[in-house]
Image 1: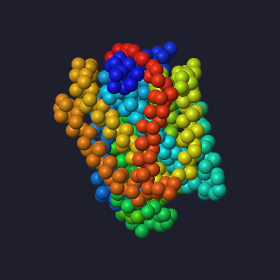
Image 2: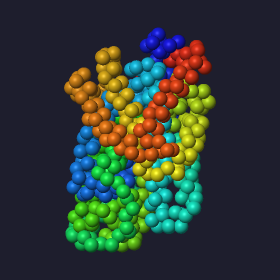
Image 3: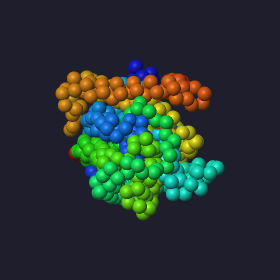
Image 4: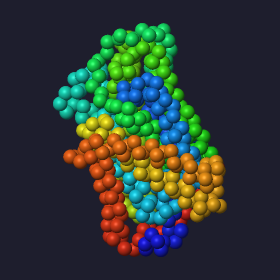
Length: 465
């Protein structure tokens, strides 16, 4: 059947396979830890913001971006996750609000963005590793290390959601310890690093590039929504986890940068991986090693948590009949192992792309999918005003519309930069538009091959609040 003629019931996600053990469900703090790694992974990755914008503007970016970019997304996710805690999260929201076509586009955009997003974290892992062992920067050794990161995270995710969330919680404490020492030591080095000798920077990031990297460091809040059926009391847990994670991520960015600013270290000395050199200047070789190991744990933790999130999209789509049923296969720990392996292959193929080009394409695709989610929020307010919403974006319809405006406006900076970044001989903007248009082509081909339409699905029962 066509999207236009499909009854409302046919647009609901299917009934999820219930968890056989209540212990596998995530509670508040494991969800906060998983969200932390889906979005941030700690203070690592923000060095080029300082290089491109300087200390003052970098801290301004890091403080304002969560207000204009993260909080609106967190509020939107809090409402929709509490109202519709379904497998596939944001995909199921858009599909319910606007039909099969737009639901498919939401999933397509997110999975396409994941191809570039997920290649960033093994890249960061290798960048930090080479700070300790330059040997890994020669030949194909870095690529081999990145592939090993992909493989290890695939194994952990096949072991189940509880393993991933517990790993995230421990990694958070381990990687935060070196930064806590930097904050403590920096006041004792007041203006002491003004003429410090650091590794010559090769970064060419300007102020717009710094802003885009800041946006990238604060994006991905909706990724936590795809595991809603595996969260304990999602109606209550999601809104609290989103707000707690926004505050936590902001503090982990702003406080260490402000502390190092006190030392007088020139902003031009910063580039991706510079935290290791800064730690060495402040606390000696042991703290430098701790920062490098923490950077590797950060990149590993982000990749690990996002494998859990993205793999639930093919699972939900297969349950809806939009992908072959093989992607709906689960192992004994309810891990979608076929989806995990298929996505890991795509992620491994992009390991050779440069960091800044990955960020530009990633934000472009992610921004398109995020826009659809804000539209779904408004559509559901109009179409299903009686839908139970344990958490609501304040301000009624006006508030639901207003919170989507700042994130969409910020995406304009990425559009400007994407015209000057090149991938495969074309601008990142053109490359991104081709990927977006391909989603519509794939949808109609898929629909033509299945003239009977998508699987008719009954509304999923919601877990008790």
